[in-house]
Image (cartoon, rainbow, N blue to C red; front, side, top):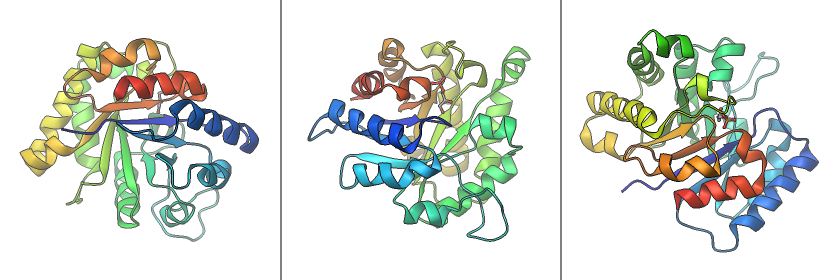
Length: 250
Ligand code: 13P
């Protein structure tokens, strides 16, 4: 039985003050002694430390939105996995479609980042997903399979890995993949993992769905056999909505 995992990706939203306010509201919504699924929130880099201080020793993980594949050096604008570990992050999101679309990330750079993050003791949420053109061209399976295979190239131990399937056409558009459409791709991802790592490893890996998840559609999505939680964008910026989505996963 896989424990569901729900993570709020705040993207480039909220100042430090806004971030700590939202995190406090969320902790109040979830309540003392929260349990039943894994939860994380991913603020911007400047807010990691102050939000982390609020989350310390609590049930909600601190998550970063990206990391570089070197430890340090002349990489202006980048942040390394060891820095994220030192600030208290438990997870890092790698290969989000917005990183691929706007910042030139490829399966190869995603692979370097995943390797580095895992080697520094961070857990990784590796994002995959097809564009609308790819879906309409009937190549969703091929695209997602190669994102998984190439993203995991040379990685033997994936016990600290979560995969997030986020169809690009469903992100921030209000268009959610139907639970059947999402399940079909989640099942395909698990089949790829079985081929790469065998049945018992593959069956333990969580595969989150992301793309316009809301309180109103979360229950149906999370009820699918291969959907093990969600990576939530817009709805995670409201504590009550995000808590409702977390409750749908418990
Ligand atoms: P939305 O929930 O806003 O569609 O964003 C999904 C996402 O990209 C999470 O990483």
